[in-house]
Structure formats: C-alpha cells, structure tokens
Length: 109
Length: 213
Figure 1 (cartoon, chains in turn red, purple):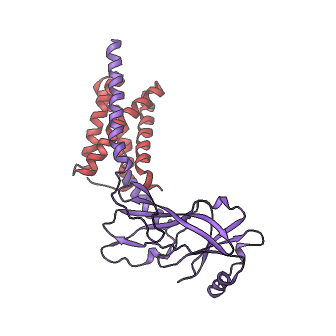
Figure 2: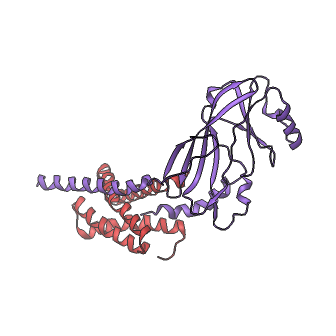
C-alpha cells in the first residue's frame, strides 16, 4: 500500500517539511508561505524527479539545481534579497535532502 | 526534495517480511520468471448477512479461512480453493477441524454447507517481462439453491509495475482477462500537470504584483 502512494507521500512530505523550515525562518504569513511552498515545490519536485530518474544526473546535482531555482523564486515571492532567498531555499532543501539521504543510506551520487 | 522510491527502499524489505505469510514466497522462481501478488475477494458478501463464507484449501496443503467483506484472500499458488457458505445459525468457525483429514471430511460431508464450483487459481509466477505486479480476482455471489453456492468471477484488478491500475471484466469464467496494453500510470499525468499548474500559479502571482506596481 505504501508503494502505491510513494510519490504522493514523498511530494507531500517535501512540501510539508520545506514549509515548516520556511515558517521557522520567516515567521510571517503562514498561509502565504504554505501557498509559496506548494507552488515552488509543485514546479521543481516533479521535474527534478523525472530528470533524476531518467538521466544520469546525480542526486546532489539535482538538489543543487532545485536549490537555485527555488532560491530565485523565493527571492521574488518574498520580495527579499537574492542571498536571503537562496539562504532560505538552501535551509529548506538541505533538510529534505538530508532526510532523503539519511533514509536511504545513500552516500554518493 | 525527498525521492519517493528512496525512503521506500528502507521500508519495503521490512514491510515485505511482515506481509509475506504465504508459502509461495518460499518457492523457487525459475529463471526468466517473477512472482506476482495475488488474492481474491467476494464483492457482495454483505448482501448475505445470514451466511458465513469459508474457503477451504483441501488440496494440496489443507487449511481454511473465513471470508469477510472487503477481505482479499491470499493462498499458496498450488492450492485449489473451494468456497463454501454456511447458515450462520448453528455454525461456529471453531467447529471446523484443524486436522487435515477431519477437515476434508467436514467439508465433504457437512450437509449444512453450500458448495461453489468456481475455479480460482493463483497465477503464482509469470514471465519476468510481464507488466503485472499484482492481481485481484473479484468474485460475486449470484445465487444459492439447495447445496449449491453460485459464484461468478466478475473482474480482475491489475496493478502494473509502472504503478498503473486497470480493472478488466471476465468475459469467460474459464479465462482470466489478460492485459492488452499497459495504461499510463496516473503519476505520469501528475508529473506534467502539477508543474504546469504551479507555473500558472506562480505566473499569476507575478503578474498580479506587476499590475499592483
């Protein structure tokens, strides 16, 4: 049964965890941040999964691309500086990437 | 970004160990073959509240199970299950003997039991290129008369290795419908639709802001 919904669960977990990280760091506009988390991850998560699953792109390279794209989007959405946007994205993606990395014991690639 | 299949790989072996209780999992699978998960269920047991439904695995290993509404019955791939119904009045599941010979005798001679002739088979193993990973036969009780329990195979639900699902109706009671073409899994549509919707949402937000300025 878990396998049936693995994509939905992973997608929902990614949105939920990144949202909590953003909320902890921004501490303003929880519903707005939830909308941003859904939109930003809705754009990057499916594309990154397709790329990662169908090409030889490494896990960490895919994560880096996701970090940069989400960082730019958060910069515009939150009307903040590029460094701040990239920092928020880095924190959010680092948490989910490390959870995924730890959960599978995947040390490379 | 959590990769769906990644965290799953840590849980899957444990889940498989817990779930896998049939002897079939211990069988040797020939090269070029793979095993697929199989079970059957009876869709309309709830329409017969006065009857208990039992499946007997007289051949080759013995044993029996009560069939409940919504329960999918798994069994050893070489077993030949026979389904019975018994009026609940005066029946207790504990009256069925555990001893193989006594159990067989119980099912062969008990005048209270209604017996079905539906032939149920567990496909067990298939060619490793076969797209199916799970199969569920859906049966339906269509009548009871005398000592006869009339059950028909209604449909088979397949889950494919790519995650797609399909339900095919039985056209012949003797032949399980074979998958014709593997349908595209739902998540392929999701992988396209979700980013498109997200891009539209982000675009709308940016446009709204530009206009506000």
